[in-house]
Length: 357
Length: 266
Image (tube, rainbow over all chains, first blue to last red; front, side, top):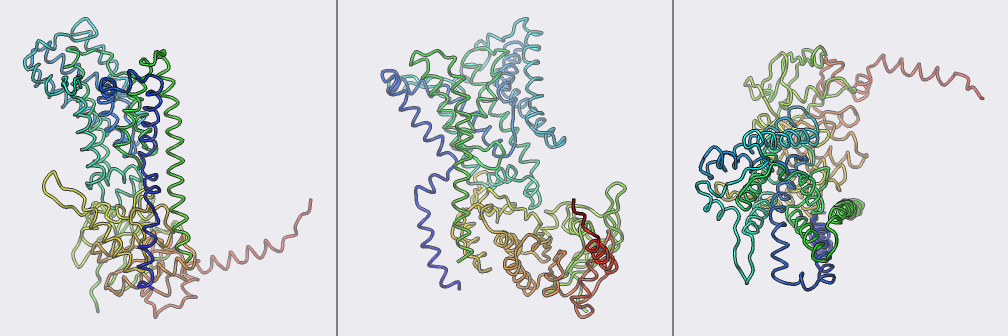
């Protein structure tokens, strides 16, 4: 029996085909969306769009959004949400800003303290979700409001204003700026160094997700945390680790913001948490967890950056950007469901015909 | 007389004021299939959760390979060689076969922070191991959710055998399967037994238990109702014990009465 089935199985392997396996990838929708949108704006506003300068303009917001979307995608694949990510970019910036510009700490030390703070908040988010069994949506909604209030409240108490200025006068500012967020001239235009960070973060996250055991654990805890625990995956530690990852990503972006703007603003990042979730969904992450792609999320950020820069380029009112966000989310979720269903049904049909042979 | 590989003595498990298991004792020998039978709520699941380290007994002793042991997690039990194939299989439907197979025990290559998952090895091994069970994996990337019930069971069983299980606990492996698929699973149970594993086969189907079992333990309401070797009991006796003898007679009488009731035509 085995001798006859072995060559037959190889034959069937080939039949899976390049296109079918391509269309089973979670990020395919985002890739197609990105290409279509780029062509769309290339037709509408070719003089701004099809240029090196246009690309640099798109990649500027795409990079910081992309860093966040990648971390949020990992968390969503792990089956959880974090609504405190947006406001956390503000909180970490304010912590670093207050400690350096007000308390007189060297900026690097203040930035490090902000990282520790972010990791603690991320840990607490994860810990509360695990211990209470409440949906992470609710728990992190709570931390969102706590941080949102504290951001403005603490800043006003200390500075009598809602922002912290003078970060550029702190010790170590120039080196921090060079490290986190600077302009790099290349091909005659200025590119943000955050683009490099974005690429590096995406590569590392993809490697972790697809090529390490931790990546398998992320898929597993999102797919079925109990089943994963039963085979020895430390589900709780994985989830807490993912919450700490989103917080750390928020710290990175928050730090980029303050060294770029030379000040930290109390309202920074509010409302952005939903962008990241939408970007990850556009990138193929299921809202129910256990499935998705980091590259997809990075592409999702690129799509939104195209809309964000393309709409004013085309001379339209920027209000339409939000309408675009909503439409993209709905389209993405529908496409995700459809492609996943189609992929699994195709395979189910193949499996069925095989058992009936 | 062979030494038992695994033994529990007078194990009691309470959940608050509910007594799930009461002074249960049983022995599992290598190269034998111990069938654990009982109706729903008899305490079968609680007993295996104690055996595999999910629960810790409230009272009583647990011996493995002659030593008194306490397992605080399934991982500890697994490391000792007690592998459990759960009713829900502990397989993640959206994940490919190879990721599922090695979940929690991933093969790695490289050093320090650059350790990566040895994917090529994982895919190859899955094909080989499943091939040994007579299942031809066409595509190790296939999500487990798209496979048939018997195939999923055999992934879970071959995973346990591959990772060097000494005792294999199978929780209702045939419950949701058709006759043919259940037959496949019973084959693997015999294969595992012949490899010298101690198999604990939980079921409420005596027709599946009798052909493969060496030793039958019947649980009822958290207690051991009966404990027989195969030569001490017939299949019919087992069926009667399972259904609870007098309960079955009572049920038959009730159903007969129901049939005789006149049907009211509106």
